[in-house]
Amino acid sequence: MAAAVWPLLACFAGLLALDRAGFDPAPGAAGAGVLFLLVLLLAFGALWWGLRRLGAATGSRSDVPAAGVLAVAVLLRLLALPLTPSLSDDVYRYVWDGRVAASGANPYLLTPDDESLAGLRDDSWRKTAHRDVATVYPPLALGTFAAAAMLPRPLLGYKLALAAVDLAGCALLLLLARRRGNAWIALAYVWNPLLVVEGAGMGHVDVLGASLVIGCVWLLSGGGRRGRRGTQWVVAGVVGALAVLAKLVPLAVLPLWWRRAGGRQRRRFAVGAVSLLLPATVAVLVWTGRVPPGLVEYALRWEYNGPLYEPLWRVIGALRLDLAASGIVHVVRVIFGGDIEATPWSTLYSYAYPQFLARVGLLAAGAVLWLRLWRRRPGPVRAAFGAFALVLLMSPTFYPWYLIWVLPWAALTGARAVLVLSATLPLAYLPAVTGLPYFPWVYSAIWLPPLILLVLERRRPEPPSP
Image (cartoon, rainbow, N blue to C red; front, side, top):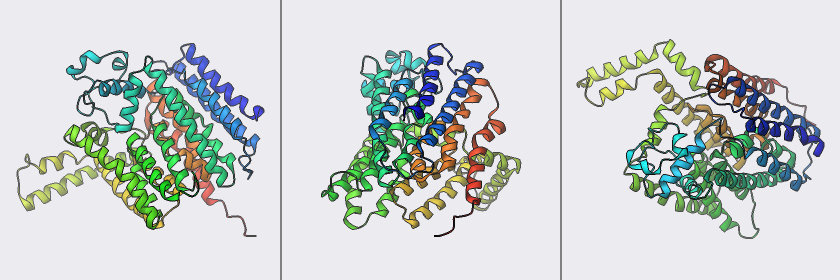
């Protein structure tokens, strides 16, 4: 194993050396950014080479030396932990929101620029982006941030805790892969450079939610203590709810898991999930008095690198379909009457623009495709893969760390296009660090390679039946 992993470890040592030497991929430092991303791309090549050496591409072995695999995973994360959060400043927002929550103030209502929070301002506040927007993170994430904010070294303490949760998720994924007959396939997640850099390096909370989802799937797939299956389904529901309270993405898969279960298992899973989600939701609504405004802002305004969204809204604008939508609103208003400046007409006119129409169209398409998943009743792994892939494909926003939700299930199901996407997604940082225009060239560099591989794999003839 040592001969197969040393190039990957060397690449991460190189990233750390660049970071310590001040070669951070920060805005305005184009050379440093390109060099950092180039070494990261080399790490994906080293991972592919290592997996080939270990026989993961063609083997069917299940006797993976779990201790050795996890030891390499620990080393990778130890090399990534000291990295400066230069690719993304989200972790500074986490620490700031944690300080606000720990002080007893309401981060769902108070933006970082609110003058009532001036006494809390520190270095994390100065490095926080979007200070005009209140937090969007659910209660478990906020609680984690608050706990970290009270530590002597909040950033390091938070990243250490996140890395520990990440490694626990990796261990459970290895068990899931072994149950599927080939534990080597889990290495495409456990050693994936995107996961290591965005988790231990940049500190994204998505790792917490994804690890909880892995734990839930492990329970749903028969993990845990035998002879206590009833309790296990309740615990699975609780763990699934905790994943939602870390980030809202797992809301797309919880109903699919519930539908797959039967009889008492379905009721027990629902009891476990609802017993946690319901009081948490009520508490946030009571504390905030409404849907958190930051969440509304994110849903309506945030956009970057959406695989379908980016070309769709441009097509809508080129075809002037937004004018057609305004015309439909005008005709309906004339029929029913009403002042153009009065609600709801003024609101409908204001939303008749290409980006919003693209969001509505993708939401409708996503709902139809999700209902197809619902009717098929996929197993826990397929449900997670399908639901998360669907959410991300239809989303207007697809930052590199969002792929962490899909990566475990892409590894288990052998979805090579997704694994290639994990290597091309870091190119999404190029516009920020080099000033390159995102569309169409960076967009194409990110999405065309996995798309081409997907098409080629689908055109490949099926092997003859024995």
